[in-house]
Image (spheres, helix red, strand yellow):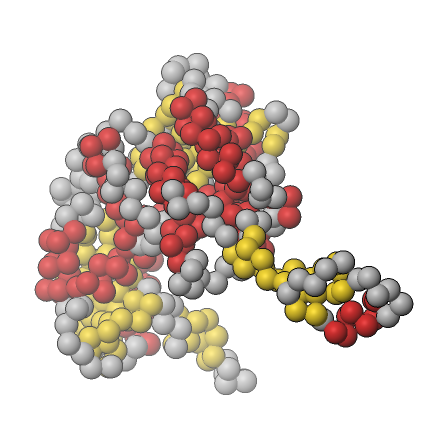
Length: 407
C-alpha cells in the first residue's frame, strides 16, 4: 500500500496536499466520488479550508493504493491502540460485526489495522473449516436419462417419454459443491483477491480459491445472502458465512470509476453506539423483574383536532421496565456533548410517558472534564429527573456498575 492514513472520526483532519499523510486533489476527488456513490445522500465528510474529516462513519476505505482507516475516539486519552481495541470490542458486543477480531490478534493490534485484521481473521476461519473439506449440500436433481437413478417422476416421465421407451425421467438426491454457502464464500474470496494489495494476503486468498474450483459464482446475486437456513448440518459454517455476508453487503463490488477500484467496510457509528448501550443496559438490569424495550413506538406526540388521529411517533431508544411497568427512559447519543434539542427530546418523552419519572441521556466520555449532570423538572405538577450520563467505553465492568446505580 503506497499510502496509509489513520484517523479518529469527528476528531482528526486529513489535509489536501502532497504529504505522506495527505490526499492530493485527485485522490480526494476519487474518495469523494466513491462516497457519493456508496452512501448516496448520507453526510460522511465535514469540510474546512483545504482539509476534511469523517463524520459519524468508521471503518476502512481503500481506493487504488490508498488506505484510510477511521476509528471512533473512545478514550479521553490520546491512545490510538486503545481506540482500536475499543472499536473492535464495540463491533463485537453490539453484534454489528458478530465476530471477535481480538481473539487471534491480541498482541498485534498496535501493528495491524482493522482492514488487515478482518482479512486475516477471514483466512484463519476459512482454513479451519476447509480442514474437514468443502461444504457439500444435498440437492434434488431431475433428469431424463437412459438409466434409472433415484425416484421416477411418473407424471413428467409419461409427458416426456410416452413414445420413447429408452428414457426414464427421474429425481435423485446428490451431494453438491455448488451450493449457496460455497457460492457466497467464493464470491467473497473473489472480492478480496481483486481488491487487496498485500502480496502475502493475496497469495493466501488465491490458495483458498483453489478449493472452490467446482463452485460457479456466475449465478450469484444479492438475494442469495438471505436464503441459507442454518440447521445442525450447516451451523458450523455460520460464522464464516456471516463474515462473508458482511463483506459483500458492505461493498458494491460493481463500483469502478474509470480505472479506480474501491474496497471498503464502513459502519454508521451512532447506530453501533446505540446497540452497544443496549448491550450494557441488558447487563446492567440483570436483576429480577426488570426488562428492556428497544425503540418503543407506542406513543404519539400530536392529535389532529378534526380527525382525532395521532401523529408523529415518539421512539425513545430504550424503555426500562420494572415488574412490567415502564420505569425509565434512556437515549444513547454518539456526540461530544448535549444540546438543547437533546433536553427537549427527553422532556417530550417524559411528558408523554406519564408514569415514568426519570430520563437518562448517555454520551461517550471523550474528556476527563465530562461530568454527569442531574436535573429536576416539573411536568404537569409531577417532579421528574433528567440525567446526563457520560460513559467510559474502555471500562466495561465499571460502566455496568455505574448504570445499575442510576436504576
